[in-house]
Length: 277
Length: 277
Image (cartoon, rainbow over the protein chains, first blue to last red):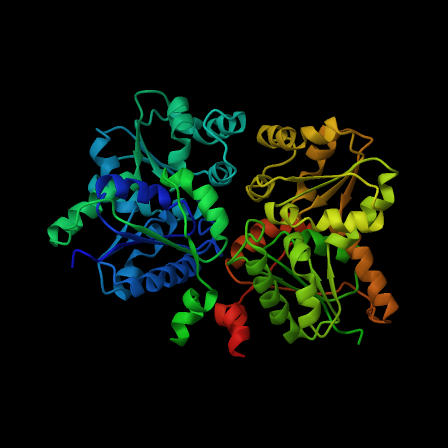
């Protein structure tokens, strides 16, 4: 059991910020990653479409006989976990519940905020998950659609456009005296300094990816499925488009170099592949 | 022949800014539109993937027996016209050549600029098309990835984030004394005031969509294929995802209300639909 990989999928390369935490938390584990870069982003799309795409990604990864499947994409985690659970023969973990649980744990009665894509925020998934831990908590939820393209362009926290965009979106959180903010999108940890700088030192920032890595470890430990080998686990990466761009932009998310990324053609992963198989 | 529609496709809703000019230029013509909103955007994707998606869109529209197919998407026009031409039984027009021809016509020896998505600029298609008209022209080409999400968020030309982003991208055009700028993306006409305001009054702005509408009229006239009915032509719209969002955001591009947008499921349009048909 223990030689099986952890499978991780995402709409694109953002999920590598989750893999970064998995590598820190579980350095020995082999990881296989699928990024749906041909159809990225999911964050502006409907539940119907995101569920279909998420099932495609997860089904593609089953060929590697994983011991667990992690939906690193917040949008897919917000709308597709029940469908993934029903369709897959292995445990499925999303990033929303671990992030929400940490937010509720640290709130101490103050308002909590979640920031994410249009689809993640529109789904209300974080709100429901946070209030399932503590129904008395007030939750601000703000969609920040420009953060993803700002990060993908390579802009850092000290770029004037980043600073102005952070202020534009997050001013309401200062007005509401929010003390805990959940980064509900895999790209946002790369703007953490700008967000923390604007909100000030007493606001705690929760990275859902970091919380998810802790949850993956606990889930595997419970099932006695942790790797028994030692030494750095391997990473194999597959994408549905543009492996070169994935290598170039993705290494900033993973914080280590990426190479040998493999291209998967549509007939191997896309919706109708499953339909016709 | 004349009762056949003009077919227009785009990666999403941006192509409605081209339809707006078609409606002005050719008010009697029926139009059928397909927006690939499930896989939008095309501008960050590879040529290989964009060619496949463009063929999907165009093939879907063939069921309406169009007299011409217009690739309203600059990215598809930049990389997929030869493949569309070879695959389709009707004339195909893209937006790049008409925009490039207008730029060369108005340059008067001064440097010309093209702004567009990462994929459109990276393809070099505008550069080649402009220099095919006048090989002596210097061409600046600048990718402006944030313009699309700024427009889709509903931000106007007087929004401070728009103003700062325009300055960030377009300062080199002021430094180079550019006199003609091609808006090489269907979203950019909605930021025309901000772009014109920053560049100043002596810079001429070319909207590739407007030039394309003129070219469509000429092409149909040559073939004696203009509509012979009078009265407002109909528009039928199909999308691969999220018809509600298309109606809501798209009416700003079309400048008239949009309704009865129809959802097309993946097995009717996606890559493997063509493969299996």
